[in-house]
Amino acid sequence: MKILIIGAGAIGTLMGAFLARSGQQVSLIGRPPFLEAVAQNSLRVENDTAKWQVRPAAVFPSVAAALTAGPYDIAMLSVKSYDTASVLEEMQATGVALPPLLSWQNGVGNEEMLAAALGPEKVLAGILTTPVISLAPGHIKVSRPSFHCGVAALHPATSPLLDKVVMALLLAGFTVQQIDDYRRLKWSKLLLNLPANAQSAILGWTPTQLYADPLAGRLEAQAWQEAFRVMAAAQIKPVVIGSYPLPWLAPLVRFTPPGLLRGVLGRFVVGGRGDKYPSFYLARRAGQKRSEVHWLNGAVAEMGKRVGVSAPVNRTFTAVLEALLRGQLADEQFAGQPAQLAAVVARVRRGKPAIPTGA
Image 1 (cartoon, rainbow, N blue to C red):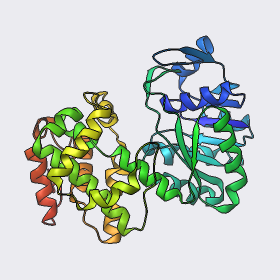
Image 2: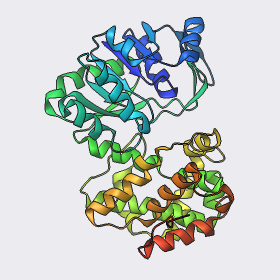
Image 3: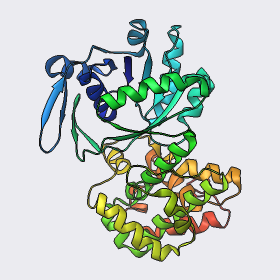
């Protein structure tokens, strides 16, 4: 297949390297440091036991340059969710016939945006569970080699293309899970991305610290419960993702007392991440002023509003983190202070705004 990777960060580099090594014709779009690194060293991949590199078919400095060099069988989107709209605008501004798009992005809402622009028959949804660390532009480390991915079509007309994509991923060494309902796939991945993410960025704590604290740990449990309850009300059934039995957990999570769930969820999250800071925290500490919290915790809160399920913890996490990134709130108001965050949750439960007007 002739494949274009849009977004040459950690996930884009991973997909590009593995697909290119298996014989697919892969091109990537990246910034100047990425272009220079690949020109000198190709795409580089390593884990604890091995290192290898592969040269892609081409690298491009812009969407326009890449699309002009097409056509492509498919373009794979691995930019942050907050960049989806601008990438779509760039693609449409070229005037070139656009290829079908497969979104590897975290969170909920990207596929709907792509479908509104291109039509659902030109959109595929995907998830990836492989933990990847970016060491340098075009150079990644796979911290845990669990090469599992899931894919789904938004429209039956896309089934022949989906079959080709699945075969390409299998040849690249991935275990591929096909799901009929893309919403089940993306919402199930959301369940795995929620724990110890937004609150870590707000409080400045590791997952271990969050679950060791009774109040912060309860908030984590309640945020997860809200997501499961919203999915149930929206009739979105979770699916098994890799080794995570989310369908089996769903009824237990919804009805387990938060204090007890804190301990169970804590063992699950801390066992996997421990003292490693999650993506939201790392992005904030790197000085980034945008976050994907709107597509994760925010998606839970907004879907909850549509289906009549209250989600005050997820709504609070979203509002507070976004206000901190905007500079609307000072870091010291919440750093290491879960009681402050819990007070905001209590206010939201009473129907008050998370961030008072004029704050």
